[in-house]
Length: 396
Image (tube, rainbow, N blue to C red; front, side, top):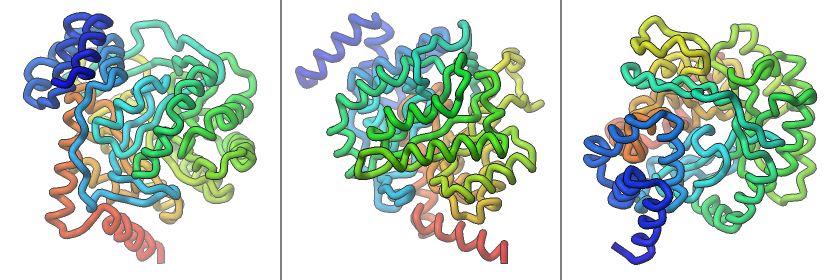
């Protein structure tokens, strides 16, 4: 083991104790069997938020071995960027931008940090995240716990040159923006996020769909969304950086048919660059088996998969395939990822699968996806083009 890696392992062990050393060693070795047999059971013995913090610190220490190179079949160009593979990390894992470089090592094609609010805030009282192990799901009600714009801006600026290199080789960075719970001017909060963090991001996400901030989902209303996005786009266009970040909107899966039509109308009218579909759901499918399924908050993981995919398909149709979509919700296999692109997504994100399978799931999803594409004698980009053609023919 190289001396620098030994030093990082010792530092991690000192900071996090014996469990941290076990996790750090597994990360360094990249051993999938060790994860399944020891690391993930050990992490699941911890409270969910503590386990999340432990995994995040391990990534921040840079203990992950380089992911295997991605094949050309996975490359995609969308949102004005090259993505070396279409599998990204959803917002919520690295809320404060503390472990971005370590997370890229897992093999993600892109990483999204946040949600970031203008001022620091603690979020909701603990406990605020719950595993539904029988359902491979999570319920969270974090409530935008954030270090604030200034802290995240300092972290991202310190690694700006590194990110420019990563973006150049197909690993863009997204920043997810939110509002403070106490704010009386939501638009001002999002505009401040664009101004402060926009120059450091390849794309920005206007998160108006978390169920854990009172009144936030009201911003998905047609008039409210139009007013908000008009201001956000104007601020983006005034940024002093040469390459302006794309602006995407993250929506809920619990929308009415009219809500979806209204959102699609505003997105197309204003020329918003993309959609992220979807956030967590406040619904509780009857199939849930965990006794914690009645906890308030947003549900993610496998039970969200079908609802998310259905919402992707509907939004793709309503926007006539003209607005790129990042599909998120229940992705834990290559087949899940393929299902979302066939519904209309150009990229996918994952998060809850990491809770149950750890970092090896990223490589597993990509391997299965490559095998499926190879079996169909196509590529991710070609499959995306087929989806566009199918939508257009359906509308004729």
